[in-house]
Image 1 (cartoon, one colour):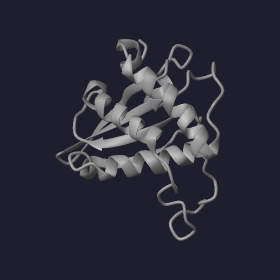
Image 2 (cartoon, rainbow, N blue to C red):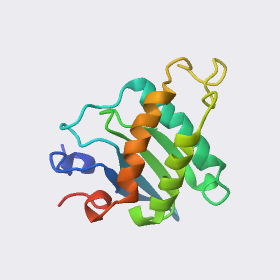
Image 3 (cartoon, helix red, strand yellow):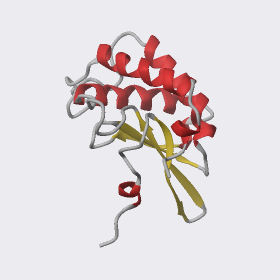
Image 4 (cartoon, one colour):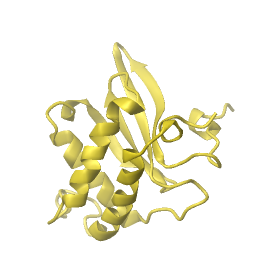
Length: 158
């Protein structure tokens, strides 16, 4: 059985950042999957599930409400390993193409107050499991990495 592409990235050298995980063509549509890596895998504690859940709700809400990006968002969701999340956009994009958008997204998240969008029993299958304070803690660290990102935070290690 062939090893899938994401298992071929050297996770012992992977740093927090934003990476193009894959690009796939469906008909004439190109989709770009981004790896938003918050944690250095196997070297930092992972994020807990309430943080991952809150990130999913807030990041999806912000991105889908953006006029120029909302219709290009295909998916926003957590990684099973809890070191980051995936975002899939329509289009052939690079990490540099979305870097400022992600900084805006996480700056917005840091200023967010109130009820988590979609955190109601009729909207979510696990609506009680959120933690805005810890999500902001993780988002603050991540946005600082994005603001000073170098090639090592935008390109997978070779």
